[in-house]
Every structure is written in C-alpha cells, then in structure tokens.
Amino acid sequence: MESIRQIYRIGHGPSSSHTMGPMRAAQMFLDRNRGAVRFNVTLYGSLAATGKGHMTDAAILEVLSPVAKTNITWEPKNFLPFHPNGMLFESFDESGEVLDSWTVYSIGGGTLANESFNELKTAQVYEMQTIKDIQAWCEKSGHSYWEYVEQCEGPSIWDYLAEVWEVMQQAVRNGLEAEGVLPGGLGLRRKASDYMIRAKGYGSSIRSRGMVYAYALAVSEENANGGKIVTAPTCGSCGVMPAVLYHLKDSREFRDSRILRALATAGLFGNVVRTNASVSGAEVGCQGEVGVACAMAAAAASQLFGGTPAQIEYAAEMGLEHHLGLTCDPVCGLVQIPCIERNAFAAARALDANTFSNFSDGKHRVSFDQVVEVMRQTGNDLPSLYKETSEGGLAKMER
Image (tube, rainbow, N blue to C red):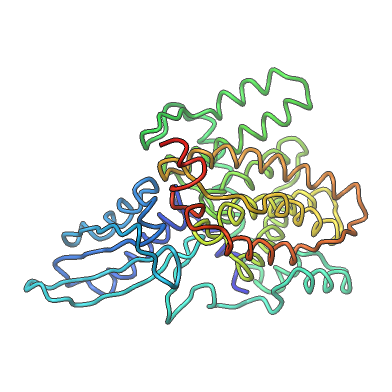
C-alpha cells in the first residue's frame, strides 16, 4: 500500500474526484505543454454528468485559461472503460495542429491513473495490505495500528498529520463562524452555527450529539463552499473525521499527540479500503466515501478510548458494514444534498460503533476485510445512475 498521505490530501472542495483530481491533471498537462496556444478538455461519464455542480470546469480553467484559451467539452453519456471519471486533454499550436493529447482518470481522493500509470500503485510503503494481517502483527508484537504506520512511514508522518489536524480544526472553526447560502442554486443555507447554538441549550447527552452534528456540518459546508479541507478519505466525506476528533478533543481533552495517533490508525483503515476496493463515489457509490469515513472515524474513536486491536477493527467494520449499498445521488450534482447531512449522521454512527465495540471483547463473525470485499462487489453491481451521475435516487426526485 502507498502512504496514508494519499488518504489525507489537503486542498479545496467540493470534490476530491471532480475538483482536486481534474485540477491536478490540468497542472500536469500544462507543465508539459507550456508552448500551447489553445487547450481542449473533454470530460466523460460521471465527471461530465456532475462536473458543473462540482466545479470541475472552474478547477481546470483556473489552471489552463491564464496560459491559453481553453474549451471544455461535456460527454456525460460516454463512459470510457477504464474508469467513470475520464478526461481527455489536448493542446494545439497556432496552426490548429494537435501538439499533445492525454487521457487520464480521476479515480477518487484526488488520485490520477490511466492505462500506463497509477498513483495508487506508486511509492508503496506498506508490505501488508489487509487488516487481518496487520491486526495479527499487532497482537503478536504487542504494538498498535499507529505504530505500524510509524514503522512503515517513518517519523516524518507525524509532521504531516499535525498539518492535517490543524487544517481539520480550522475547517471546523471556519464553518461554525460562516453563515449564508451555499453556492450552486439550491438555496441551501448553512446550518452549522445554528446547530451549535441549539445544542448548547440542551443537557449533556443531547448537547454532545448536537455538537457532533454541528462540527460535521461546519466542515461539510466549508467543502461545499470550496473552502480548504482535508480528504478523509474524500472531499464529499470530509466532515466525518474532523467532527469526531474535534468533539473528543473538546469533551474528553485528548492531547494532540493522541489525536495524531488516531489519525494514523484511521488512515491505515482507509488505505486498506482504497487499495482493495475504492473510495470513489463514481466507482462504488457513497458507501466508498461516507461509509469509509465512518469506518475511519470509528477506528480513531476506539483507539482514543483504549480499544484493543480487535475492538478497533470491530468498530471500523461496523462503520462500513452499516453503510453498504449507500448510493451516490447528489441533487443537481452538488456536494450538498444529501451529502452534508450524511456526514453528520456518519459521525454520530462512528461514535456509536466505538461504544458498541468497546462493550464487546472484539470477537465477531464478519471481518473488516470481508466487508471491504462486499463493498467492492456491491459497488460493481450498482447501476451507473446511482454512482455520482445525478441521474438516480434523490437526485432524480428533486428534478
């Protein structure tokens, strides 16, 4: 497996696959075509179907248009065989001749790939790629999941995770301060600050849950507004992890050093899913985004509460299992409805998974790795209209 840095990418929303990935691809193409006088970019499949709502064109134009005239062509009905999120970049000289062409795919979490290269398969730093093997190592050696991360990544990972944690916290703070209507045309108002105010008026139990909702809404709304966030594992699911960790730091006074170790553990679980299945909504639906985020947050919470390797695995397994089959059906292609609300519910469910697992001895029938495989198969079986095309489910009902 590659570095967990690929799970935690710092950037701007609203979508890792539809915004961050295309922007990175545009920059890579520009770097090798500085002399071009015109660019054409063709977007295919899911990338074209919901690209305008995800600001795909704006992200590409921000990179290419300052250098040369750039045209965007939309092909939402044309799905290339490699991946639903296909892009064709072309550069032209003054006579209109093609200088260079490049077909590349945004495969989730801001990662790029095509038939000749795959960022998911570069810079491999983990020898083991299943939780079963890693858990066995932990139980045999007496180490924790985060110690396996440190052993494979080296001590520099802590500086990176410290930056990740700071961006997550700032996204919560920014989202709680901001008010107004989110862009895109749905007229959806920000709710985070209202939820925080209302939560503070309740007793401890409801107040605690209300604050978790507020934190998740804050980050998800920042993402929908194009703000700076961290993929965990994607932009569309970026509110889950910060909500859980911010809440636990605030309510339980966990030190930042322990939060960073929880981030390492969560990243490891997300990395296993990304390696053996997918975190791309266009490939497996929202189960691969919000479902994986819930599993990561559950694992992080379980570790913070002193869970054993088996209990941590169980918490993560429940977080993912109970999101199996979740479709990706964004209204108008925007990362707003139902995405923002799903982040809040997944954060609450992650805390429930932690509580449930810590009541147990960690033994259970279905393993995390088995659920990952089921998620992959389920994603393959889902019709394409339920995978980030905005043509099915809630998206269709709201037309």
